[in-house]
Structures are given as structure tokens and as C-alpha cells.
Image (cartoon, rainbow over all chains, first blue to last red; front, side):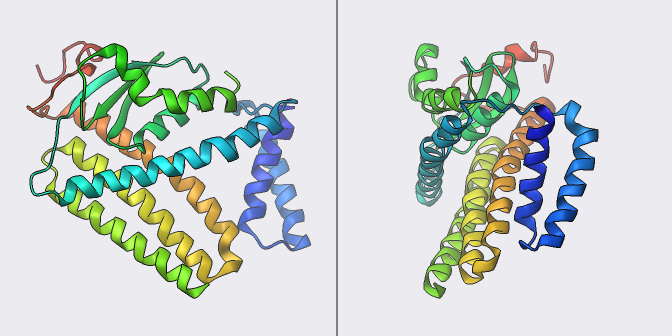
Length: 161
Length: 109
């Protein structure tokens, strides 16, 4: 099962990079097959009956939220950069996450980096360390709700945690 | 189609400009990384989409490039931020610092 998933990922990437000509796709299948044999033991993809639901959640819940937050983050940067005296209130904070898988945590950290005013610096076990440009309330209990809850709920479904 | 492409190219250029301004104007490294990451990510997306609309045959490849940028750009900035925290003086205007406990207070003490 792991081999099939790895093969599909490699083959789809190869397919996107080439034009859809039958010769190229055949070569791509061959190359993907050989690569799969070597790298399958390092990968961690899983396919199960929930995959369509997870894919749909990813496409229709995660991506719109992600791009919305990315645009908001840029407007936030624009607002700060263009104001005469830059409003800053920085700090490093620690937030607990419930996500278990490595890939889920990575995606959460990446999403947080691209949301307004935050930058994930490190992950240690269940804790994310975040640099934020604006510490609104100095209350650890509220950090989670303020910074990570939005993505955590969606990614919990996408990555099956 | 040409007009959509030009709008995206212009937007991308504006975001890059704002990112550059942010890197110039922000007072310390972490804020600079923040401004830089966000602006370059969206700027790169916009410019790539602009190119994609100008050459519709390239759209699939461009989607792939966008996926790779979306994965690699934030990782890069996180690593730079972590290395900066470990190696250099911390900014003095911090309201709160939870990372200190992670490195056991042995860095820069």
C-alpha cells in the first residue's frame, strides 16, 4: 500500500512537469517505479477509504482559509510597513498542539508562518514556539485560541489525527 | 487573459516592493523575516500565476512550482529564525520569551 502511494505521488509530480505525451508518461512510470523501490521505506503516505473526504477538506476548507490568511498577512505587513512609526509589540510564545503526525505538525507550522503577524520558530514535542509581532494579551491560555485553533481543526481532519 | 496576467504581475511586484520595504524598515531580525516571508511568498505566487495566465500551457507546471514554494519558503524562514535566536543577541523590546526555557538559558547568557 505504501509503495502504491509513493508511486502515485512520484508519477503525478512527473506528469505535471511534462506534457501529456504517451512516451514521456511511459518513461515517467518507469522512473517512478525504480525510485519507489528505493525510497518507499522512507516515506509515510497512507491511502484508505477516508482519502476522498480528506482531499475534499484539504481543497475546500484548508486552501481557501490558507490563501485568505496569506492575503490578510500581506495586508497586515503593508499596513505596518507604510505607517510612519511601525507598531510593534513582539514576543516569543509557546502553544500546545494536539496534532500527532510529523507531517501534520509541519503543515501547521508552515501555515502559522504565513498567517498575519506570526512566525513559527521551533517545534518541540507537542509544543510550537512562535514569534509574534503583536502580543495582544499576555495570557498563555488564550494564545492557542488566538493563533493555532483555526488551522488545527482543519488539519486534524486532513491528516486524520 | 492578457489583462488578468498583467494584473497578477503588477500585484506580485507590489507585494515584493512591500516585502523589501519591510526588510528595510523593521527594527529587528525576526520582524524582518516575518515581513520578508509573507511578502515574497504571495509575491511569487502572483507573479507565477501572471506568467501562467499569459502562457496557459504552463499552468500545471506553475501549480507545481507554487506547491513547492508554499512548502519550502516557510521552512526556510523558520530555520533562519531559529538559527538567529541561537546565535545572536536577542531583541530588547520583547514582551514575552517562552523559547528561553527550550534552550535551557545556556544560549547568550
